[in-house]
Amino acid sequence: MVEVLLVILAVVYFARRARGHGPAKDPLASLLSGAETAGIITAAQRDQLLAYASQHAPPASAARLGGAAWLGVFAGLFVVAGVSLLIARNWQEFGPMLRVGAFLATLLVVGEAAIRMRERSYGVSVPLELLWFFLPLLGIGLYAQTFQLTGDPMQPFLVWLALTAALAWLSPRPVVAAVHTFAMTAVLFAGNFVVDAASAILGNGRLAPRSMLVIPEGGATPLAWGLSFALLAAIAVQSLRLLPRSHRHHFIGVAAAWVFCLLVAPTPFHVAHPAWIILAALALVTIGMVATTWLDTSVEERAPGMTMWLGIIYALTFTWHMRDPASGAASGTGVAIIEIAFVAAIVATLLLPNQRLSPQPAWALGMKAALVVPLVLATLYLGDDMYLVWLAAVGMNLVLLVVAVGAMWHGSLVHEPAQVNLGVLVLVALLITRFLDVFGSMLQSGIGFIVAGLLLAALSWALERMRRRLLAGVREVPA
Image 1: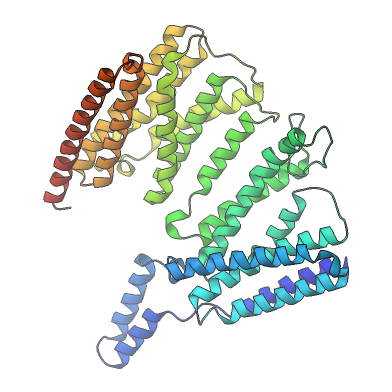
Image 2: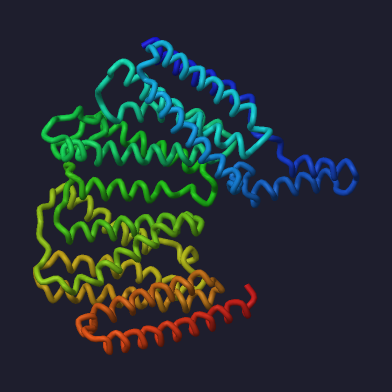
């Protein structure tokens, strides 16, 4: 108990020390102050430039890591691994107090060095902060192994996340905050859905201690729900406040994925019916796409949802091979959640402001239709009539085709080369897949492969010419 208190006191000490060691002064402010002193600009102009920079320029803490900095990051991780290996190889040589004392001394040195190097070297301070960030987890593991402690497998990670939260918030750069946010996401999903299931499969019949985060099929404890929602809230808050501007809304996808795991994992909301799972996946990913579009987020924030949406529809184009209707058990609560998500996805899509999708109202309405139609088609998988299932598969192919052509056309109109390239990529994938899917059984000879190769080469040549013409039109028309 004394050793745990020492670790906590060390973390609190460094949290207070870090408050007085913020990032270096803004070089732009110093430069403009010098220009004002030299009479190049006035005080009013200096204030206007600083106000404009604060609204449009990325913060200094969001600078990208260079190659040397990334080498330093990996150097820090290698140091952690090396320390762990040395301790493991000489474990029996150290007494309990020596082990804990050595860890606290290491934590003291690394923390002090990280604080002192913040204003001197970016490439050194970031690896030190990451080393400082992972040391408490190493210390918890050493303490548990020293005193032969067993119990909840997720509790050490929760304690580590709590101890390092101050470092994530006080660090002047978003690297540590990004790692901490990712770690919270991993702990949330592992504790809720993975650890206990893996223990049951790999435990050879032995019952391991149950995780306090697990949500079993028989019902979770209030503590599990409370910790899960607390982690979700912490992920959202840290994403909005600490991550770079182009990555602040990824928590929307995390929340959607968490709800989907509640439905497919053995929880009280378990759904084993493939058709309901399809509908849930489409509804949740559509809600995520609409939410990020409504908030006018960056391309990096919208890309995962768009990729997932296209991937789901692409996978459903193969369902024309189905021979039997979908079947399986589904809890009433899980079905109710899916129905609510389905209605919410359609309503949110219809209420989405048109200007968020396209400056041209007709195209915005077309994009809304492209989001709603797959949801409606997905309901056909719930029926027992196989003709409706095959009709849904054909419809998904048509949706992908319309999306591909529409992305190329719309991208040329609004001068967005990325949309043109995306449309070409989707169209190539769709055409090649359907070609092999339909005529694959005919490729029994060398002649068949030669003909197929020539057709695909002609298709590639035609699409590349079309893409270049569209991009040429984008470059010729001024934005």
